[in-house]
Amino acid sequence: MTSSDWYWCLTHGRAEEAALRDDPDNALGPYPSEQAAADWRRLNEERALKWKVEDEAWSGEDADS
Image (cartoon, rainbow, N blue to C red; front, side, top):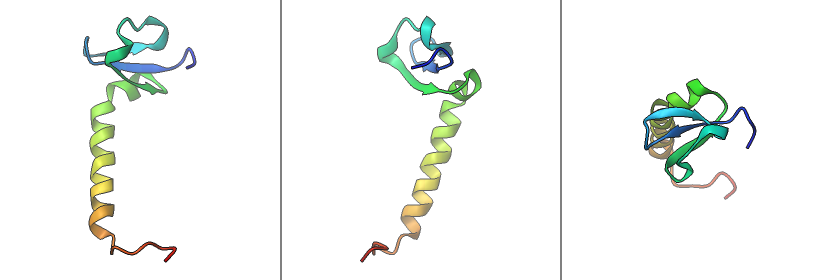
């Protein structure tokens, strides 16, 4: 954890600097910036969609087989 780490606080519904978090058990992160922490939902949805598309495109065979 560095002083530039940011977290999304699920309790307060806002981005918080690592040093100022008061509820670390209910936080997502770390993120590299306040904006990235605030965009956690969009980033998560984009990642999930990418994985879904990749899963649907997978032929069922590993490349190493």
